[in-house]
Image (cartoon, rainbow, N blue to C red; front, side):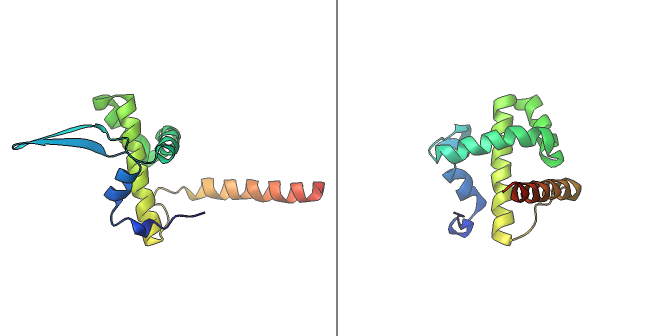
Length: 126
């Protein structure tokens, strides 16, 4: 079942729904950003963090972002930031019906060929 992302007015609202937005506290003229709020859907957050761990190693666009952030903030905060960035990318890809800008066509082609091979060989076994 696919979700209609247009029900969220912005990518920030979607990130908040997933519980990946940082909490903020305001006092007088100061604003302090804290840990993620964890008020959202914990399954979505878990899946995104798992995917972010994989993407931080294999996606060239996200790898650079992850490495820069990890030097400053540490592993956990960098992974959560990658998960949040991935969710924002997903929102824009789905809402604008566009391809992911970091898509590697040679990898996609190889995976599709592998799936086609598996499908034909599993049909022959039946």
